[in-house]
Length: 461
Ligand code: HEC
Ligand code: HEC
Ligand code: HEC
Ligand code: HEC
Ligand code: HEC
Image 1 (cartoon, rainbow, N blue to C red):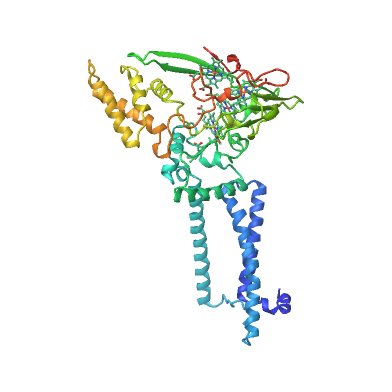
Image 2: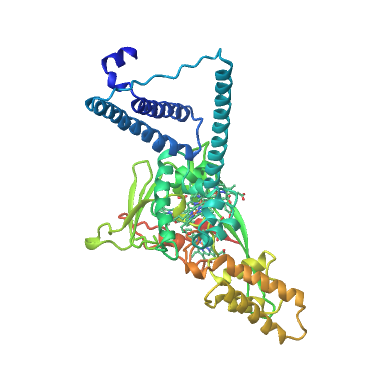
């Protein structure tokens, strides 16, 4: 080092030394993170921010500062002023006063590092929390937050599906996060927030942290209850035995609904609308040399129609795994009655609840008033009278169903967001869902079609 300074005496100045320290710190931290990442010890995506943004910044800042120091020193020399060579302060720990100062400095530095570390850690943890994602921009995220809390993933952090592990997706999401903050601050965001999320990370990297096709097997039986609009709210129950299927890890065979996501199959499709509801073209490569192209209505000259091309993954069916809303008012009311919410022993409750819930209201307060007044007005006339306690409970439950599914400020109402698990008539959904492809109309060159055979996916008991 002293040889270096003998050769370049102008580099021996405070500014250049600070630059050198910044650059070395940047390089050092980079190596440490690289090692942690390599050993698989570091999984918090926020560390990626340090890794990809802070280290290079330090490194480059140091490189910029170093020549500035030299330039300043040269100017000083040219002006005839003495060049003050940088000297390290001399510390003599035999001197009691200096020893005390050194000990105090070391102690305080340690304390500061600890405080800064804890603060940074809790800050990062907070930014990872669903509260941060779901509630910071309260109105904008209200629909997703409400669906999330009531859904099966209420204990899974937003970032686990929306970002997933690793630094590159983290940085990408922070950049788009900045754009979102801008959109909220200047009120330029869309209402409702558009779905699908076009740059969502492939589901294989996120969902498969917790679910994987080898884990699914067999059937799932659902009992679905629905009610009539008569005085007795007459109940009909059916059992739907869904052939969930999956991959048999012993034989490597794929069956049933999760056959689509076996590692061997690759299904691509073209959607011609931005909600991915209209799918005129499907291509299947089954990994054993068979490639089939199913076309419902071809593009010009019968070829592949123009549109977004995608490889099918989990979210092409499970597009509402977390932000689940009822398919329709009728479905919400039926589910509530079945689950012990709205009480089927209240005469006409299905018909009346659907009536007050279907109307359009300016905001939540107006809706709550109208639901309360509407139901009370109807039951006030009845003989024998309906107990007030039962009526209050019905009003509250109906208001909750509204607040869970309709968000006037964000222009989200019944059916705004398609749900692709299921199908329209005779199914529960107003959306085509599985029937986007399974409609007996998508035809391959050999004449086979993507089947709508009712027994393919489920039996009804
Ligand atoms: C189980 C995984 C999962 C979790 C947990 C999750 N999301 Fe989502 N989110 C999705 C999927 C899948 C989509 C829709 C993808 C598509 O169709 O492109 C989505 C869509 C969205 C959208 C776009 C609008 C819409 O409703 O489609 C927003 C906004 C959103 N999520 C916010 C959040 C917030 C805030 C949280 C945490 C409170 C969260 N998400 C938690 C999987 C998840
Ligand atoms: C961090 C772990 C985790 C991630 C990531 C995750 N899930 Fe889940 N998922 C769960 C848990 C836990 C449950 C609840 C299981 C239960 O209730 O038995 C669940 C349940 C489900 C269910 C059943 C829902 C129901 O109503 O019974 C579906 C479907 C599902 N997840 C799909 C997805 C999809 C699609 C993704 C990716 C977008 C995803 N999950 C990501 C942990 C996760
Ligand atoms: C072709 C459409 C489709 C695709 C693709 C798909 N699923 Fe499913 N999945 C379904 C249907 C339909 C059900 C049953 C629906 C129900 O229970 O309401 C289901 C059920 C599930 C369940 C609940 C299983 C149970 O035993 O209750 C989980 C978890 C799940 N899927 C996760 C995934 C994951 C993860 C992927 C991607 C690797 C995936 N699915 C891909 C259609 C699909
Ligand atoms: C993007 C198009 C597409 C969508 C959407 C889709 N499928 Fe399929 N599905 C296919 C294709 C292609 C095949 C294979 C047809 C063939 O080989 O004859 C298939 C086959 C199947 C099979 C038979 C698997 C086997 O064992 O051979 C089942 C069961 C199935 N789909 C269920 C569903 C369900 C349930 C949904 C909705 C939740 C759904 N599919 C949505 C394209 C799709
Ligand atoms: C490609 C797969 C597939 C085919 C083919 C199919 N279904 Fe379905 N069906 C589903 C799925 C998935 C659901 C939704 C289950 C859920 O809500 O969890 C469903 C739900 C239903 C329901 C409603 C149960 C409820 O939740 O209220 C009925 C009724 C039904 N199907 C009837 C039929 C009939 C009739 C046919 C033949 C014309 C048929 N389905 C063909 C996949 C299929």
